[in-house]
Image (tube, rainbow, N blue to C red):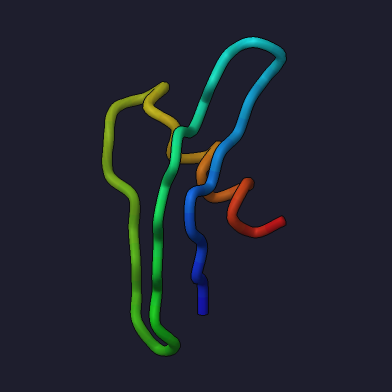
Length: 49
């Protein structure tokens, strides 16, 4: 299960994520879709830490 509220990620002065709320229930499947460079990898790495 993933449950995060107001997730933020900065690289020096660059704000990569601003206030992401995300809930993924146990047993469900969740995926990220989007163009290159929109923050899919940054989001998954930040929420797993």
